[in-house]
Length: 306
Length: 306
Image (tube, rainbow over all chains, first blue to last red; front, side, top):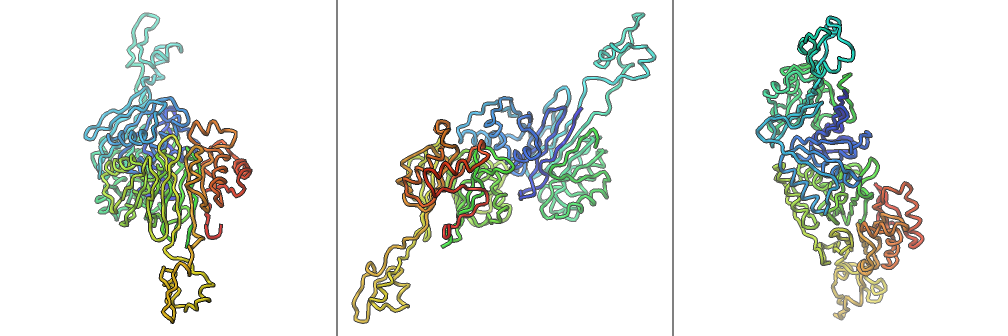
């Protein structure tokens, strides 16, 4: 199943000509989730030839501008380009008014429905579930209400055990039924229980997104064993006090969470402008968690090959 | 006196990688006025190395997103970069709430004062005046409340008539006093009235900004004799019905206003995306008003040499 992450922006606070604010597009089986939406995200989507009309869900981690100022422009452009498909927005409550006052000021009645889902401030729950993915929020420790997001691929099917096909001489035309949970009834009307024939599909993808947050050890237990963790590293290790003060993490913080949560790979981002050479941050992170990777604008991480 | 206009963006509706929405920076004697502020304007200012901390006044013509979605990001970045100098915003009333709900959602107390001046919906008046410039609004005919802006350089000084210096043998050290309005008292204690010695300074610059609007003939009488008129030309002449329907102007409309108002030069902009070759619009405009010029992102019009 396609499970592909595109980095549209990975810088912090103030945008510049070559530094875009946070936004990521996650393609799960051709359903497109936009995670955060800094100013100019709609142009970033165009730059990387990603159709923004295909985005069905937008998840906004928190209401600092570098994570959402591009949303109203995206919503407006979707409207002007004739969208009629609904758009689901998951965000903290004030965003609803922020959008509404702006639509009202321009006398705009969107020609598509906007479904607003309020992120809980003190609760962690499943936000969305379909046949392919379950998305839940978890609480981050920032200077204002802030959510992490956990995406877990799910499958209603089970994986058939090859040896059992031979053992019970299961005909090919029964395989799909069994994958979907049916028992197998052989020629002698003997019932072979599905549980004996199948196992869970084990190679389902998962992704956790953590930005912005102070070091928060409780995150590790929530995101245990995910394939890929994106964790902000605004600062290098030596600026740990500045990180705590501003509600952010260091490279060491992110790497330690990755290690504790036993994730396979760590992506870092949300870099402070002070770092001209990001390899300093990468090398620091690798000291504590070797499978660390920088994110850069335009990077695509295909979870099937990454 | 410096009187210089920089085009930061001059396209309409939906931004793309190479099409920036409306924003202009007007430098009048080193006081910087930002006129409209489409998404990503703060980055455009950086791109053209224009310090946005020097902007003291922002004028927003109307509350369609392509004219103001970049303002909240600019305000936020000014704050994050430590501004303490006040910022004056002239806009229609709803913008005040739009800014406030966003600052409130991010728990931001700006470290500089924001002075909000509500643009009148049905009145034309002087918005701002100092020793160098007088700025007034005028009503445009768009789909929502929309203001044009008229900038007139003013001078408290008068121009001395050279022949009078010779005639009355005025010493050099009296010239400044006379320029500032004093009468001249000669060696015989005879008083020569200032009005005889001086005239108004006639080469003061002026600029009128009209975006967005339908053809509105009454504008011509308001902006009579300005040096430079910027007037939107969203459409070519043949799409006049579409222009009326959407509250915009054609090339012919803008050119006719320029002619009727006896302006010296016409700048056109706010182009519909359908025009890949903007020279079509320019040539049309020139048919009716020869001194027509295209605006392009990055253009600088220095009124002292233009």
